[in-house]
Image (cartoon, rainbow, N blue to C red):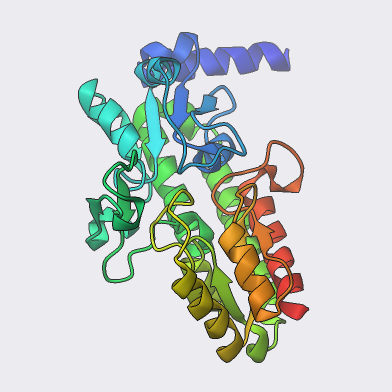
Length: 314
């Protein structure tokens, strides 16, 4: 009887929403695994959520296929971070006139802050990606700040309400409240984990410029960035720059060199040896894992914080 009444309720919700998607369920297509994880928690249980990038995909090397375009054409809601960070998604949206379906969830903190598109000089004239070069401290890694994650969750809930109507209203506020509680719990955990690192041991040298927001929120010091471009595919620094980074590591008491998990970072390994530091520590920051703790945003953030704190303690 309970199941029967639940089905009637779902049918009524669809009728009230007046949406064509009700017979098959709402389709939400996300640019990557992180917003897909958030969408699965906030959307109604009947919603089909997919990620164009599979877990573990390096977003800097991602190239969409015709199959990805087909997914976007079928979507009721498309969720991306920002057109500056994901120009390939913007191009598909523009060429297929899908603007009305898109939520740029990180736009208030990325392109709205004055960033602009340019090809990174260090990649040369043949670079295949159009990338964000930041002005005035604009950092696109908004998912590393739990306070912004909470705000993005609220935006996502509002977009789902607009798209799905009363279907999303069914338990939507409770799902949003649980999402907010998770973001705040992650914030508290990261403050405890990274706050326990002594002030003198908080210096970090990064391979890729993706820890700025995390460092600013939790009191770490980014003493330098090895790759000048906003991508893991940029050319390694020159020999002179390598010497400078090793000296910088010694002079500024850098305790750890951080690289992206799964990325071969020869320059970072060389600098660590020259500076007398342990091998670079690999963090998962830009994509979720296929399984395990880091298969969710909350798990990824906690795992990264613990890994980083352990490296700084050495």
